[in-house]
Image (cartoon, rainbow, N blue to C red):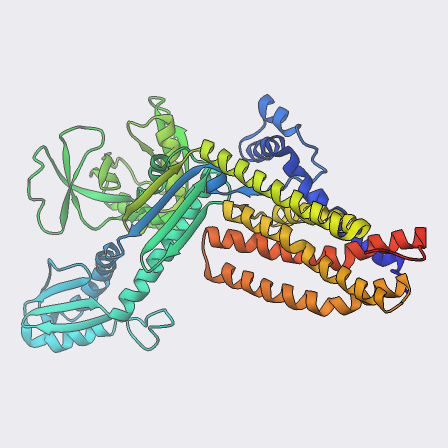
Length: 554
């Protein structure tokens, strides 16, 4: 018999209502967006009358999820950056030097005195005064090697050691360089994502392309230059002992020293020890503040326990000496250490504006980029172009919608009207699912929805044509409808499962616009099958129970 239990009807229409309820906020997009921004600002920075007014624009008990608009719909900035992974090799060798130095000093009787020499990036050259002890020196350094932490470098060590006369040469292995490249890109991705998230942008696209490139797309940001200023600097904070001060930019700083310009004093340069005493990587927090002495904007910072201990030890041992605070190879300030600083916190002062101190705090909290980035491609997409895209997508959707509705009504009469109702519910449920999962809608995503509109009625066409076939065999209306749904089910599932597999492959293998198309297509397939198999059948059953027609026309 053509019947659906009451509990199944409740579940079917409950799912529909649930989907439409989550889609509803998109009808009031601007109002809900202002509400969400105000709520987030109140939680982070406290309430103000303006924020409370915006928060009251939408009831808190209603869903407030929105379909995020992608770069091509909302406007924003697009960058393609190349990470200079080679920069990390020299840092790896610098980090190895203290450990190797201490190990070789313990073998002084065999290797003699040691002196570090200049070397290419990724190599460490150490001259020993007793070449006869080269074999022992190589053995000691090889004992410091660590296994490569990567799937492709299993069984390999991170350094290889060679001797050339009185010169001990230490270099990174190929396996370690490949692993370092991968770690550098992953770390850069995470830091960029944190920096962009700090600004509060919605659904940025930050993903790896190739071996050393990163694609960054941020909807809603003003320009590519604004995005570059946020992520383009390494924000590398270090603390160095001061060797001297000069006004000659060409002066030779000496071995293992660097010459860096002063940010505050034009024409002044500081000679610093190349090896930093404390690194900004050991910071745990940074906040914009004001210097209590002169009221100028500044940035307060706090170290983790290891950094606080190192900072305390160094300042205790060097009271009276100058100590340079270096940001991105510029000396912010070089104060004198008047006493030991053991509280684990401090303040960075300089010629900052409020905006600059806020941006610096954001960069320091997110961490330093491990390597410099070169921007190969940059584009700014204005909101006007996004509005044009939305309008074009809206017109295309309406034309497709109207054509399908008219075709179904003319071809299948009352049954076609029922299919049209299910189609309207289907589109609403797609937007509900997009809002629920926080997906981003792009122009290809709109194309996926338009394609779904055409595909959504395909299942109903299969059912209705099967009902027609059953009616020709002189079966009653109830039996014909029941057999129509049963016999069309396998064809509906086969067609939609294969299409869903295609959408899944596009999502896994694709990126950017391709994934946006795959998301809307995949969700559209799920809602289409649900509405065709369950919703239209439930509506037909309810209509049939009330009218009890002796004959039907499809």
